[in-house]
Amino acid sequence: MENDEQRAKEIDGSVLEGGGQILRNSFAYACLFRQPVKIHKIRAGRPKPGLAAQHLASIRLVRDIANGRLVNDFVQSCELEFYPNELTGGEFVADPKTAGSITLMMQASLPVLLYCQHPSIVTYKGGTFVSTSPPILFVRDVLMPTLQRMGIHFELAVKQTGYYPRGGGNVQLNINPIRYVEPILLMDRGNISSIRLRVFAAGNAPKSAPKRMAAAARELLVSAFGTDVSVDTLIEMETHTPSSGTGINITAETSTGCLFHGSACGDRDTPFEETGRTAAQFLIESIQHGGCVDEHLQDQLIIFMALARGRSSIRCGPLSLHTETAIYIAKQFTNANFTVRKEEENFVVECDGIGFENRHLSC
Image (cartoon, rainbow, N blue to C red; front, side, top):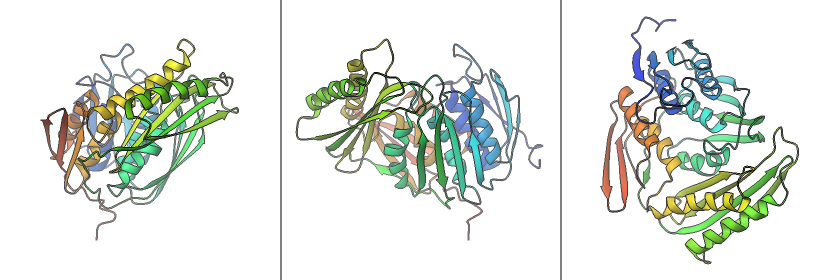
């Protein structure tokens, strides 16, 4: 391919967060700038170093979108080379054959799909609700409406839910390319105006689980925010799923449109009440930091802020290691200017984006 002779940018996969985010963000930037990349020491500090099935599915999806070439793309590989090419768009499938997180596979591919020549349809298979990452409902209820503020629009359809260990989830993404990403301003949190609580039991999971999780979570939420904030509860029972599972998803919205998320998966060793309290406590702590984004949204906005045409500002709680890593990788590939300053009990992340333009849509 025409860019194989260009020198690959080398990235240390063990720095900072030292996990899959380095892969996902590095591959996205590599595609956008047609910059070959070589990543070494992949997940070196993890109990099982190297690529897992979910990472492999993510990078192969990005390879397909970019009509590119991979070297050393196998499970447990600790060094990887990627040579991207033209972003044309089309229909794609990502399937790790496990309960690998669909949310994380989407994180790897979404920035790339925005800069294709044509619209794309992507089918993601795997886990829609797994313990190691935000669930697909985080994307639908928090990330997607927040990205709409940046001019990013896409459609998301959950065809089938999937849980650990078999996965089997199926999510379809329909997306049109855009010319520019717009900057975002999230500085005024406002007051909590509503909370949506969604609990579920799938397959052979105990049918009492959702009510027990919901009651425990609701008690904690009312204690934190009072009875003036409405808490809407939806209980879902799913019978035809490849794996059994339970979980809780909570979304809070403020008077200024800020969105916060908390979730937790049930497991056989944890009382369902404790699962409900875990999700509620995560949400409460995110809000009590005084910022406008939660921990998960915080790091996922960084790549879009770097690409945007203008200055973005977000107020958040303490910077997560994932956010620090996302900023670090952005600086390896772009001239985006990030500044982080502390203001009383929270932090402000500002970025002068590079105004990256989709050359296929330029006038």
